[in-house]
Every structure is written in structure tokens, then in C-alpha cells.
Length: 382
Image (cartoon, rainbow, N blue to C red):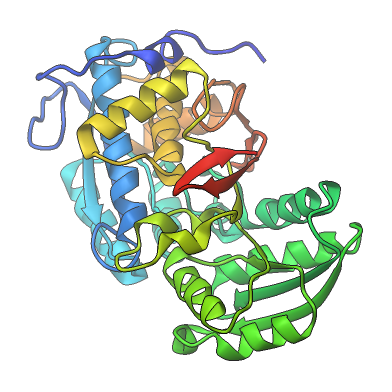
């Protein structure tokens, strides 16, 4: 597929301008992109990363002249990783005049919002909602990240093909669609790989502070590697409790682990050698990644995680689709949606989470996962 060029050249732009638009700097000829995610609460690392990176992309695109001359305006809303609050945020954004939705950040709220968006014929591109049902309610929804099935399958293949272990234990959250979805496909692919799942232990949202039972069973099973398809706050507890009981296997996670180095009061030395599958490695040497990481660090004094990277690419994908479809700022959201959902299947972009990324009509992206390892408190490509 021919790559879409005008917007993509902007992705290495080095400077922001004071006139770049954000919410509060509205103009009648702006294209309005709304977003919601957890900007407060236990998942705030994800939501703030998405909002910060999306604004960087919007500013870059505007500084370079917009998408076909159309300036972008970005409005982030806090949904606290709560489905009801996410729907409320979506309705607030509709009242604002949103023409496309970059969200939500997490899967449960995304499923709830997509049910509303399909009824409104609102274009939705989630940067990081990985549950299958985030984009299945209608033909209006796409995602930037890998789906849960993709993550589980790819993790099992990576562990098997690289001979990381012969005996694997899994700890997962059976009450969470993200965690249980990743585990289901990991388990299915494990049958094709040269390792055995010797222990699979579940927990629920009501019991996610004490992992002593799960860890003891994993230890007794002789597991050499433990697969952890859930979120970083709970994983920090797992690492702390495993260390206290003298259990030191290899650890392998997926994108929900990203953020582990930011947990307050956590001994990050316990993450040394931890591996995870991700679409983004901040130490990559390509110019796009280097420029993005440098700008994010300058503005926010931290290294961007893969949630930030997916959001950054998501804004550029929307801009490329706007150009491809010839969208103008005066079009209503339903008209925009009809054009964008076709254009998304016709663009190809080189982003920080993948080269030659494309989307099919189901809304799924095509790109290759990367594996990273934590060394000396930083992610390193494997």
C-alpha cells in the first residue's frame, strides 16, 4: 500500500509553537479531537501518558500547517478508569463539538463508550484499549495497540521461540477482560510451543493485594518463568511479595506492566531482568523515536511509555486519514466518521510503535511487537 506522506513527514518535527491549539484556544476552523482516560487514580500513569503524547502530536501537526491546512484541537477528559464516568466524559465531549474520539485509554471504559459511539456514528480510535470488544460494536472503531489475543499469542511465541523456559506459571486476573483475554490466547498458543504451563493461578479485583497463595503454588510447581498479564500496580506487589519469600523466577509481562518503574515506594531493583512485550522501545535509534522521546522528556521530565507512544501514533493516524479523505473542519461528526473509517484502511504510516502500519476494516492494526527487558531501571530492546 502506498504510504501517505504529507502528515508523516511532520512526525520528526523538532519544535512546538506558542500558537499550537489546545482546548481553550478554540477556533471555528479547527477539527476537534476528544479523548478520555484515567488522569487520576491508580491507572493515571496510562491516562496522563496518552494525553501528554497526544497533545505533542497535535502541536507538531499544527506547527507544520495542519492536516491539509486543517488545524487540530485536543480536549482530554478524566474518566478515572470507570465505565460510567467514561460515558459521561464522552457526552461532555459531544457537547463540545467533538468530531473524532481518541479513546478510551483502558478497555472496560472503551467497551462502554464504543456502545455509545456506534449509535452516534462517531469515529473512535483507541490508543490502548486492547480488549477485543473495544472495537467490535460497529464499523466506526479502530485501535492503535495490539489486541489482547495478539498479546497472548505473541508472548507465548516469543517465550517458546527464544527458549526462555520449559516450565511456565501464569498469574492472572480472572475478573478483568484484559487479563483473562491475554491469558486465554497465551494458553492456546502454549500448546504449540516447547514449554509447559505447570501452574495457572487466578485472582480477582476483590483479592489483588495478597498474592502469597498464587506465588507459593508457582514456586512449588517448579516454574522457571512466571507470565503476568495484568497491570503494573498489582505486579509491583507480586515482585515485592515474591522477593520476601525467596522466589526469583524469570518474569514476563505485556503492555499492562508498562508503568512498573513509576510506582511510588516500590523497590525498582526488583525489576532487574524483567521482560515484557510492547510495541515501543524508548531506546530505539530511529529518528522518529529519538525525537519523540527527547521532546516528551523535555516537557514532562520522564521517559514516555508505550501508552504515550500509541497515542502519539494515533493522532498522526487520524491526521493522515483526514488528509486522505479530504475532510474539512466544518463537517459534522457523522459525516467525518463515514469518511475516516474508509480512509483508515487506505493509509500506511511509519510511527514510533511500528513501520508501515496499516489497518483493516475490522479496525485492527498490522505491526510487529517488540520485546524489552528492564536493565538498571530502564527499558532496553531485546
